[in-house]
Length: 223
Image 1 (spheres, helix red, strand yellow):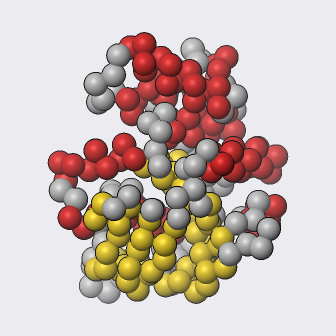
Image 2 (tube, helix red, strand yellow; image 1 turned 60 degrees about the horizontal axis):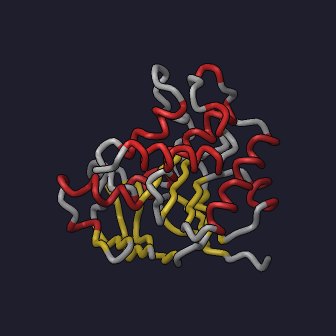
């Protein structure tokens, strides 16, 4: 489903963010990308989301070569990919329903189908009763659940999450990880960037560790 072959990314001649990164993810697989600050975790997710292009190597997602993806086709590719950010990135002047519905705005979809989709993912994240609220009325964990619902409303085959529990307390973080596990069980490939070792131990999965932009280890869970 996801294949990276000798991928590199440079920001200016002297700063190498990623170098010679190769791995594959199968459909429905759950994996972590981990490593210290500056290891290259966020850069890797940006490449997979097509917000940036690799400097070298090849990235294929769902048989789509991202290096050959024209800028005017990126929006079509992103229909297949959901992204969850650490800082939620919700629009404060929109309701929960409206924030979740945003990715559907460019699709030719009836109001009835949009309503069905949004209500469905809000139920998935246990926020069906908060559709009319605004982000400021929600806790941090609830806002992250809205962000996950927004990422899932387009039924992506790949879900990327960049430090999604970094701003949350430990209990809420566990709730979010449980939700990611449930999403994976629905057949979605999930890749989570994190440095939280306690969560990785509590929710064991494959761990791809980066160090200075290179893969230091790639360990599969025995659980």
